[in-house]
Image (cartoon, rainbow, N blue to C red; front, side, top):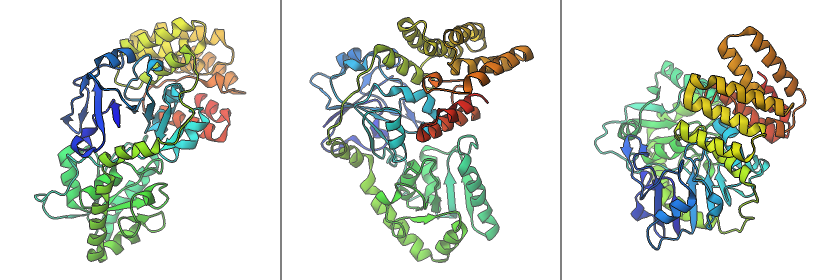
Length: 461
Protein backbone atom coordinates (compact mmCIF):
# COMPACT_ATOMS: atom_id res chain seq x y z
CA UNK A 1 0.00 0.00 0.00
CA UNK A 2 1.33 3.41 -1.00
CA UNK A 3 0.50 6.20 1.44
CA UNK A 4 1.00 9.94 1.02
CA UNK A 5 0.90 11.55 4.46
CA UNK A 6 1.25 15.00 6.05
CA UNK A 7 2.88 13.59 9.21
CA UNK A 8 6.41 12.11 9.42
CA UNK A 9 5.27 8.79 10.86
CA UNK A 10 8.83 7.80 11.76
CA UNK A 11 8.45 10.00 14.82
CA UNK A 12 6.39 7.03 16.07
CA UNK A 13 8.08 4.07 14.43
CA UNK A 14 10.83 3.13 12.00
CA UNK A 15 9.91 3.04 8.34
CA UNK A 16 11.60 -0.31 7.96
CA UNK A 17 9.01 -1.76 10.34
CA UNK A 18 6.13 -0.59 8.13
CA UNK A 19 6.06 -3.76 6.09
CA UNK A 20 4.07 -3.58 2.91
CA UNK A 21 3.87 0.22 3.19
CA UNK A 22 5.55 2.66 0.82
CA UNK A 23 5.37 6.01 2.55
CA UNK A 24 5.93 9.51 1.21
CA UNK A 25 5.47 12.46 3.55
CA UNK A 26 5.05 16.16 2.77
CA UNK A 27 5.23 19.42 4.67
CA UNK A 28 7.33 22.55 5.24
CA UNK A 29 10.99 21.55 5.72
CA UNK A 30 11.36 23.01 9.22
CA UNK A 31 7.82 22.42 10.41
CA UNK A 32 7.84 19.16 12.33
CA UNK A 33 9.55 19.18 15.71
CA UNK A 34 8.36 16.25 17.81
CA UNK A 35 9.46 16.26 21.44
CA UNK A 36 12.37 18.48 20.54
CA UNK A 37 13.58 16.35 17.63
CA UNK A 38 13.27 17.43 13.99
CA UNK A 39 11.70 14.88 11.68
CA UNK A 40 12.06 15.87 8.02
CA UNK A 41 9.53 15.37 5.25
CA UNK A 42 10.22 13.61 1.96
CA UNK A 43 8.63 16.38 -0.09
CA UNK A 44 9.07 20.03 0.84
CA UNK A 45 5.60 21.53 0.45
CA UNK A 46 3.57 24.18 2.28
CA UNK A 47 -0.08 23.06 2.29
CA UNK A 48 -1.26 26.45 3.58
CA UNK A 49 -0.21 28.13 0.32
CA UNK A 50 0.02 25.22 -2.14
CA UNK A 51 -2.54 23.21 -4.07
CA UNK A 52 -3.11 19.53 -4.62
CA UNK A 53 -1.94 19.86 -8.24
CA UNK A 54 1.35 21.40 -7.06
CA UNK A 55 1.83 18.66 -4.49
CA UNK A 56 1.10 15.93 -7.03
CA UNK A 57 3.70 17.43 -9.39
CA UNK A 58 6.32 17.37 -6.61
CA UNK A 59 5.91 13.66 -5.73
CA UNK A 60 8.74 11.24 -6.54
CA UNK A 61 8.67 9.84 -10.04
CA UNK A 62 6.48 6.77 -10.25
CA UNK A 63 4.86 7.23 -6.84
CA UNK A 64 1.08 7.01 -7.16
CA UNK A 65 -0.60 6.85 -3.72
CA UNK A 66 -3.29 4.34 -2.89
CA UNK A 67 -4.53 6.81 -0.31
CA UNK A 68 -3.77 10.28 1.00
CA UNK A 69 -3.64 10.26 4.81
CA UNK A 70 -4.19 13.70 6.37
CA UNK A 71 -3.67 14.06 10.10
CA UNK A 72 -5.13 16.76 12.35
CA UNK A 73 -6.63 19.35 9.98
CA UNK A 74 -7.21 21.77 12.88
CA UNK A 75 -3.41 21.94 13.20
CA UNK A 76 -2.13 21.07 9.72
CA UNK A 77 -3.64 23.11 6.85
CA UNK A 78 -5.17 21.22 3.96
CA UNK A 79 -3.84 21.86 0.45
CA UNK A 80 -6.16 23.88 -1.76
CA UNK A 81 -7.99 22.12 -4.55
CA UNK A 82 -8.28 18.72 -2.89
CA UNK A 83 -11.31 18.05 -5.06
CA UNK A 84 -8.82 17.43 -7.89
CA UNK A 85 -7.19 14.56 -6.00
CA UNK A 86 -8.09 11.30 -7.79
CA UNK A 87 -7.04 9.12 -4.85
CA UNK A 88 -9.01 8.29 -1.70
CA UNK A 89 -8.48 10.94 0.99
CA UNK A 90 -8.54 9.71 4.57
CA UNK A 91 -8.70 12.28 7.38
CA UNK A 92 -7.56 11.67 10.97
CA UNK A 93 -9.04 13.92 13.63
CA UNK A 94 -8.21 14.02 17.33
CA UNK A 95 -8.93 16.90 19.73
CA UNK A 96 -12.37 17.78 18.43
CA UNK A 97 -13.51 18.52 21.98
CA UNK A 98 -11.34 21.65 21.69
CA UNK A 99 -11.73 22.51 18.01
CA UNK A 100 -15.17 21.39 16.81
CA UNK A 101 -16.34 24.83 15.53
CA UNK A 102 -13.27 24.96 13.28
CA UNK A 103 -13.47 21.44 11.84
CA UNK A 104 -17.22 20.95 11.46
CA UNK A 105 -17.03 22.40 7.94
CA UNK A 106 -14.45 19.89 6.70
CA UNK A 107 -17.07 17.36 5.59
CA UNK A 108 -16.39 17.93 1.82
CA UNK A 109 -12.78 16.81 1.92
CA UNK A 110 -12.60 13.17 3.00
CA UNK A 111 -13.68 9.90 1.50
CA UNK A 112 -13.29 8.50 5.02
CA UNK A 113 -12.83 10.25 8.37
CA UNK A 114 -11.08 8.30 11.13
CA UNK A 115 -11.59 9.21 14.78
CA UNK A 116 -12.00 7.73 18.25
CA UNK A 117 -15.04 5.66 19.13
CA UNK A 118 -16.87 8.53 20.84
CA UNK A 119 -16.52 10.73 17.78
CA UNK A 120 -18.03 8.40 15.19
CA UNK A 121 -21.67 9.29 15.83
CA UNK A 122 -20.82 12.97 16.33
CA UNK A 123 -19.20 13.42 12.93
CA UNK A 124 -21.87 11.39 11.20
CA UNK A 125 -24.40 13.85 12.62
CA UNK A 126 -22.23 16.65 11.22
CA UNK A 127 -22.84 15.15 7.73
CA UNK A 128 -19.42 13.59 7.24
CA UNK A 129 -20.49 10.76 4.93
CA UNK A 130 -18.17 7.96 6.06
CA UNK A 131 -16.79 8.01 9.61
CA UNK A 132 -14.94 5.02 11.05
CA UNK A 133 -13.27 4.16 14.33
CA UNK A 134 -9.49 3.87 14.21
CA UNK A 135 -7.08 4.47 17.03
CA UNK A 136 -4.45 6.89 15.77
CA UNK A 137 -2.16 6.77 18.80
CA UNK A 138 0.89 4.73 19.68
CA UNK A 139 4.08 5.14 21.65
CA UNK A 140 6.98 6.97 20.03
CA UNK A 141 9.68 4.34 19.78
CA UNK A 142 12.57 6.85 19.67
CA UNK A 143 11.63 7.97 23.20
CA UNK A 144 9.44 5.33 24.86
CA UNK A 145 11.24 2.12 25.71
CA UNK A 146 12.91 0.34 28.58
CA UNK A 147 16.06 2.24 29.51
CA UNK A 148 18.73 0.13 31.24
CA UNK A 149 20.39 3.22 32.74
CA UNK A 150 17.20 4.81 34.09
CA UNK A 151 17.87 3.74 37.67
CA UNK A 152 15.39 2.31 40.18
CA UNK A 153 11.64 2.79 39.89
CA UNK A 154 11.50 5.19 42.82
CA UNK A 155 8.05 6.65 42.00
CA UNK A 156 5.13 4.48 43.07
CA UNK A 157 2.76 6.24 40.69
CA UNK A 158 3.37 9.07 38.26
CA UNK A 159 1.63 11.20 35.66
CA UNK A 160 2.87 13.69 33.07
CA UNK A 161 0.37 15.56 30.96
CA UNK A 162 -1.64 18.69 30.33
CA UNK A 163 -2.58 20.26 33.67
CA UNK A 164 -4.40 23.26 32.19
CA UNK A 165 -7.74 23.27 34.08
CA UNK A 166 -9.52 24.93 31.13
CA UNK A 167 -8.58 22.06 28.82
CA UNK A 168 -8.52 19.19 31.31
CA UNK A 169 -11.53 20.11 33.43
CA UNK A 170 -12.58 16.66 34.52
CA UNK A 171 -9.00 15.47 34.93
CA UNK A 172 -7.97 18.36 37.24
CA UNK A 173 -9.85 16.99 40.25
CA UNK A 174 -8.39 13.54 39.61
CA UNK A 175 -4.86 14.93 39.54
CA UNK A 176 -5.42 16.46 42.97
CA UNK A 177 -6.69 13.12 44.17
CA UNK A 178 -3.57 11.50 42.76
CA UNK A 179 -1.35 13.95 44.61
CA UNK A 180 -3.18 13.27 47.87
CA UNK A 181 -1.94 9.68 47.67
CA UNK A 182 1.18 11.14 49.27
CA UNK A 183 -0.85 11.44 52.47
CA UNK A 184 -1.04 7.62 52.47
CA UNK A 185 2.73 7.33 52.28
CA UNK A 186 2.70 6.65 48.53
CA UNK A 187 5.39 8.25 46.32
CA UNK A 188 2.94 9.93 43.92
CA UNK A 189 3.87 12.62 41.41
CA UNK A 190 2.01 14.64 38.76
CA UNK A 191 3.59 17.22 36.51
CA UNK A 192 3.63 18.71 33.02
CA UNK A 193 6.22 20.02 30.61
CA UNK A 194 8.38 16.90 30.26
CA UNK A 195 8.85 15.48 26.77
CA UNK A 196 11.16 13.45 24.61
CA UNK A 197 13.96 11.52 26.27
CA UNK A 198 13.27 13.13 29.65
CA UNK A 199 9.68 11.88 29.55
CA UNK A 200 10.84 8.37 28.71
CA UNK A 201 13.25 8.48 31.63
CA UNK A 202 10.49 9.70 33.92
CA UNK A 203 8.19 6.80 32.99
CA UNK A 204 11.07 4.40 33.56
CA UNK A 205 11.14 5.65 37.16
CA UNK A 206 7.44 4.85 37.69
CA UNK A 207 6.04 1.59 38.95
CA UNK A 208 2.54 2.69 37.92
CA UNK A 209 1.68 5.19 35.19
CA UNK A 210 -1.67 6.81 35.91
CA UNK A 211 -3.85 7.89 33.01
CA UNK A 212 -7.23 9.43 32.34
CA UNK A 213 -8.50 10.21 28.85
CA UNK A 214 -10.63 13.17 27.86
CA UNK A 215 -13.00 11.49 25.39
CA UNK A 216 -12.91 7.87 26.55
CA UNK A 217 -10.18 7.21 23.98
CA UNK A 218 -6.92 5.30 24.18
CA UNK A 219 -4.62 8.31 24.13
CA UNK A 220 -0.87 8.58 23.66
CA UNK A 221 -0.15 7.97 27.35
CA UNK A 222 -2.02 4.67 27.23
CA UNK A 223 0.75 3.30 25.01
CA UNK A 224 3.70 5.32 26.33
CA UNK A 225 3.34 4.03 29.90
CA UNK A 226 3.58 0.28 29.15
CA UNK A 227 6.23 0.91 26.48
CA UNK A 228 8.44 2.24 29.29
CA UNK A 229 7.74 -0.75 31.53
CA UNK A 230 5.34 0.90 33.99
CA UNK A 231 1.95 -0.58 34.80
CA UNK A 232 -0.84 1.24 32.94
CA UNK A 233 -3.67 2.37 35.21
CA UNK A 234 -6.68 3.48 33.16
CA UNK A 235 -10.20 4.69 33.93
CA UNK A 236 -12.72 1.86 33.99
CA UNK A 237 -15.23 3.71 31.79
CA UNK A 238 -12.76 4.05 28.91
CA UNK A 239 -14.45 3.04 25.65
CA UNK A 240 -11.42 1.48 23.99
CA UNK A 241 -8.97 0.06 26.50
CA UNK A 242 -10.22 -3.53 26.25
CA UNK A 243 -9.47 -3.46 22.51
CA UNK A 244 -5.76 -3.22 23.31
CA UNK A 245 -5.02 -4.62 26.79
CA UNK A 246 -6.61 -7.30 28.94
CA UNK A 247 -7.75 -5.58 32.16
CA UNK A 248 -6.29 -7.22 35.24
CA UNK A 249 -3.62 -8.98 33.20
CA UNK A 250 -1.98 -6.29 31.05
CA UNK A 251 -3.35 -3.13 32.67
CA UNK A 252 -5.42 -2.19 35.73
CA UNK A 253 -8.65 -0.18 35.77
CA UNK A 254 -10.07 2.17 38.41
CA UNK A 255 -13.09 4.37 38.96
CA UNK A 256 -14.30 7.04 41.38
CA UNK A 257 -14.91 4.48 44.12
CA UNK A 258 -11.59 2.67 44.24
CA UNK A 259 -8.63 4.72 42.98
CA UNK A 260 -6.79 4.69 46.29
CA UNK A 261 -7.60 1.06 47.00
CA UNK A 262 -6.40 -0.10 43.59
CA UNK A 263 -3.08 1.72 44.04
CA UNK A 264 -2.56 0.41 47.57
CA UNK A 265 -3.37 -3.16 46.58
CA UNK A 266 -0.90 -3.04 43.69
CA UNK A 267 1.89 -1.65 45.82
CA UNK A 268 1.18 -4.24 48.51
CA UNK A 269 1.74 -7.01 45.94
CA UNK A 270 4.89 -6.01 44.01
CA UNK A 271 5.13 -9.40 42.29
CA UNK A 272 1.66 -8.95 40.74
CA UNK A 273 2.45 -5.34 39.87
CA UNK A 274 5.63 -6.31 38.02
CA UNK A 275 3.87 -9.21 36.26
CA UNK A 276 1.11 -6.97 34.88
CA UNK A 277 3.60 -4.27 33.89
CA UNK A 278 5.72 -6.83 32.02
CA UNK A 279 2.65 -8.25 30.26
CA UNK A 280 1.59 -4.75 29.24
CA UNK A 281 5.07 -4.05 27.91
CA UNK A 282 4.96 -7.20 25.79
CA UNK A 283 1.47 -6.41 24.51
CA UNK A 284 2.22 -2.81 23.55
CA UNK A 285 4.72 -4.08 20.98
CA UNK A 286 1.68 -5.39 19.05
CA UNK A 287 0.32 -1.85 18.96
CA UNK A 288 3.27 -0.10 17.33
CA UNK A 289 2.23 2.45 14.74
CA UNK A 290 3.90 0.38 12.03
CA UNK A 291 1.33 -2.34 12.72
CA UNK A 292 -1.54 0.11 13.12
CA UNK A 293 -0.79 1.67 9.74
CA UNK A 294 -0.72 -1.79 8.23
CA UNK A 295 -4.20 -2.37 9.63
CA UNK A 296 -5.54 0.63 7.72
CA UNK A 297 -5.96 -1.47 4.62
CA UNK A 298 -8.38 -3.76 6.47
CA UNK A 299 -10.19 -0.80 8.06
CA UNK A 300 -10.72 0.76 4.65
CA UNK A 301 -11.63 -2.44 2.80
CA UNK A 302 -15.36 -1.87 3.24
CA UNK A 303 -16.47 0.42 0.40
CA UNK A 304 -18.09 3.69 1.34
CA UNK A 305 -20.03 6.41 -0.42
CA UNK A 306 -16.89 8.33 -1.38
CA UNK A 307 -16.28 12.04 -1.19
CA UNK A 308 -19.56 13.95 -0.89
CA UNK A 309 -20.90 16.37 -3.43
CA UNK A 310 -19.98 19.91 -2.41
CA UNK A 311 -19.82 23.41 -3.82
CA UNK A 312 -16.66 25.43 -4.27
CA UNK A 313 -17.84 27.71 -1.47
CA UNK A 314 -18.28 24.72 0.87
CA UNK A 315 -14.69 23.69 0.25
CA UNK A 316 -13.02 27.09 0.32
CA UNK A 317 -14.93 28.19 3.42
CA UNK A 318 -14.30 24.92 5.27
CA UNK A 319 -10.58 24.93 4.51
CA UNK A 320 -10.09 28.57 5.53
CA UNK A 321 -12.05 28.17 8.77
CA UNK A 322 -9.95 25.19 9.85
CA UNK A 323 -6.78 27.18 9.15
CA UNK A 324 -7.64 29.65 11.93
CA UNK A 325 -6.21 27.32 14.57
CA UNK A 326 -3.37 25.93 12.46
CA UNK A 327 0.25 27.06 12.16
CA UNK A 328 -0.51 28.95 8.94
CA UNK A 329 0.62 32.57 8.85
CA UNK A 330 -2.02 35.25 9.39
CA UNK A 331 -1.68 36.73 5.93
CA UNK A 332 -2.12 33.28 4.40
CA UNK A 333 -5.33 32.75 6.36
CA UNK A 334 -6.58 36.16 5.20
CA UNK A 335 -5.90 35.12 1.60
CA UNK A 336 -7.89 31.92 2.12
CA UNK A 337 -10.75 33.89 3.74
CA UNK A 338 -10.71 36.40 0.87
CA UNK A 339 -11.08 33.53 -1.59
CA UNK A 340 -14.25 32.48 0.22
CA UNK A 341 -15.50 36.07 0.36
CA UNK A 342 -14.99 36.54 -3.38
CA UNK A 343 -17.17 33.51 -4.02
CA UNK A 344 -20.01 34.81 -1.78
CA UNK A 345 -19.49 38.48 -0.82
CA UNK A 346 -22.96 38.74 0.72
CA UNK A 347 -22.81 35.54 2.75
CA UNK A 348 -22.50 36.41 6.47
CA UNK A 349 -20.30 33.35 6.99
CA UNK A 350 -17.58 34.66 4.66
CA UNK A 351 -17.74 38.12 6.23
CA UNK A 352 -17.49 36.64 9.70
CA UNK A 353 -14.52 34.51 8.67
CA UNK A 354 -12.73 37.40 6.97
CA UNK A 355 -13.09 39.52 10.11
CA UNK A 356 -11.61 36.77 12.29
CA UNK A 357 -8.78 36.18 9.82
CA UNK A 358 -8.03 39.91 9.84
CA UNK A 359 -7.72 39.89 13.62
CA UNK A 360 -5.61 36.72 13.47
CA UNK A 361 -3.22 38.54 11.12
CA UNK A 362 -3.19 42.11 12.37
CA UNK A 363 -4.22 41.79 16.01
CA UNK A 364 -5.66 44.97 17.52
CA UNK A 365 -4.78 46.88 14.36
CA UNK A 366 -7.43 44.84 12.54
CA UNK A 367 -10.20 45.76 14.98
CA UNK A 368 -11.79 48.50 12.91
CA UNK A 369 -11.91 46.41 9.74
CA UNK A 370 -13.34 43.45 11.67
CA UNK A 371 -16.00 45.70 13.22
CA UNK A 372 -17.15 46.85 9.76
CA UNK A 373 -17.24 43.31 8.40
CA UNK A 374 -19.30 42.01 11.32
CA UNK A 375 -21.76 44.90 11.02
CA UNK A 376 -22.15 44.08 7.35
CA UNK A 377 -22.77 40.43 8.21
CA UNK A 378 -25.52 41.11 10.74
CA UNK A 379 -27.19 43.60 8.41
CA UNK A 380 -27.32 41.00 5.62
CA UNK A 381 -28.91 38.31 7.79
CA UNK A 382 -31.12 39.19 10.77
CA UNK A 383 -30.69 35.69 12.25
CA UNK A 384 -26.94 35.05 11.91
CA UNK A 385 -25.49 34.78 15.43
CA UNK A 386 -21.68 34.31 15.25
CA UNK A 387 -21.04 37.78 13.82
CA UNK A 388 -23.24 39.36 16.50
CA UNK A 389 -21.38 37.37 19.17
CA UNK A 390 -18.08 38.62 17.80
CA UNK A 391 -19.29 42.22 17.77
CA UNK A 392 -20.23 41.86 21.43
CA UNK A 393 -16.74 40.52 22.21
CA UNK A 394 -15.13 43.46 20.41
CA UNK A 395 -17.39 45.94 22.21
CA UNK A 396 -16.43 44.38 25.54
CA UNK A 397 -12.73 44.66 24.68
CA UNK A 398 -13.23 48.31 23.72
CA UNK A 399 -14.78 49.07 27.12
CA UNK A 400 -17.68 51.05 25.60
CA UNK A 401 -20.73 50.31 27.78
CA UNK A 402 -23.22 51.73 25.25
CA UNK A 403 -21.86 49.54 22.47
CA UNK A 404 -21.80 46.58 24.84
CA UNK A 405 -25.48 46.94 25.70
CA UNK A 406 -26.51 47.31 22.05
CA UNK A 407 -24.38 44.37 20.93
CA UNK A 408 -25.57 42.09 23.73
CA UNK A 409 -29.19 42.96 23.01
CA UNK A 410 -28.66 41.85 19.40
CA UNK A 411 -27.00 38.62 20.52
CA UNK A 412 -29.84 37.81 22.91
CA UNK A 413 -32.46 38.47 20.23
CA UNK A 414 -30.76 36.23 17.67
CA UNK A 415 -30.13 33.43 20.18
CA UNK A 416 -33.81 33.16 21.10
CA UNK A 417 -34.91 30.79 18.30
CA UNK A 418 -31.85 29.67 16.35
CA UNK A 419 -31.51 27.45 13.31
CA UNK A 420 -28.38 25.45 12.55
CA UNK A 421 -27.66 27.68 9.54
CA UNK A 422 -27.72 30.77 11.76
CA UNK A 423 -25.00 29.28 14.00
CA UNK A 424 -22.50 28.35 11.29
CA UNK A 425 -19.24 30.12 12.02
CA UNK A 426 -16.38 30.50 14.52
CA UNK A 427 -16.28 33.11 17.27
CA UNK A 428 -13.86 34.96 19.50
CA UNK A 429 -11.71 34.05 21.29
CA UNK A 430 -9.81 31.97 18.77
CA UNK A 431 -7.90 28.92 19.88
CA UNK A 432 -8.19 27.19 23.23
CA UNK A 433 -9.16 29.86 25.72
CA UNK A 434 -11.69 28.78 28.33
CA UNK A 435 -14.65 30.37 26.56
CA UNK A 436 -13.61 28.87 23.23
CA UNK A 437 -13.52 25.41 24.81
CA UNK A 438 -16.92 26.03 26.45
CA UNK A 439 -18.36 26.73 23.01
CA UNK A 440 -16.72 23.73 21.40
CA UNK A 441 -18.18 21.47 24.08
CA UNK A 442 -21.57 23.17 23.74
CA UNK A 443 -21.56 22.58 19.99
CA UNK A 444 -20.76 18.92 20.59
CA UNK A 445 -23.64 18.61 23.05
CA UNK A 446 -26.01 20.42 20.71
CA UNK A 447 -25.15 18.21 17.73
CA UNK A 448 -25.50 15.02 19.75
CA UNK A 449 -28.87 16.14 21.12
CA UNK A 450 -30.09 17.70 17.86
CA UNK A 451 -30.86 20.92 19.73
CA UNK A 452 -29.26 24.08 18.26
CA UNK A 453 -30.44 26.09 21.26
CA UNK A 454 -27.72 24.45 23.37
CA UNK A 455 -25.05 26.01 21.17
CA UNK A 456 -26.87 29.31 20.76
CA UNK A 457 -26.93 29.67 24.54
CA UNK A 458 -23.16 29.29 24.68
CA UNK A 459 -22.71 31.93 21.97
CA UNK A 460 -24.94 34.33 23.89
CA UNK A 461 -22.84 34.28 27.06
